[in-house]
Length: 142
Image 1 (cartoon, one colour):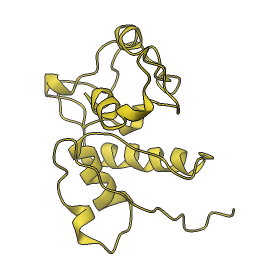
Image 2 (spheres, one colour):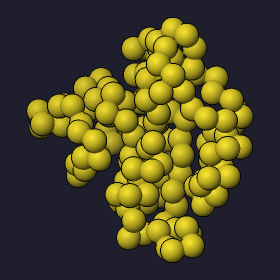
Image 3 (cartoon, rainbow, N blue to C red):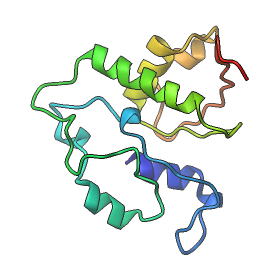
Image 4 (cartoon, rainbow, N blue to C red):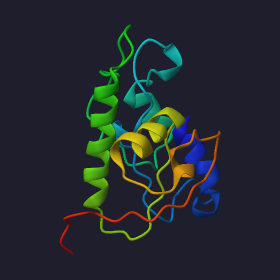
């Protein structure tokens, strides 16, 4: 679902043949809370790659969804994944990056990982809602 939202939201960057003008990168750490709910289970990687051949899936190594279990993912695990995502994001060379994910993950990111003075950023995200945020990295040398 997040891939479909990204393609819809950034449709001006996707050509008619599906090629993209910028990298679209799937990241295992930027996914919804795992476990319990079948709707949050990832399809197998081969199937997703076939449907979206222009997406870079190199950050996802497992063919099957290893995060999904019959139990809901612990909040600490979700927070850690959001934190690890931000560490990876910090290493990207681009100055402008679009992050598309699920509302629960984004809520966790803005409430538990990032420090913000804007209380509106800590509110629930609506479907396909876009928020522009400037991120600065404490302690990162340029």
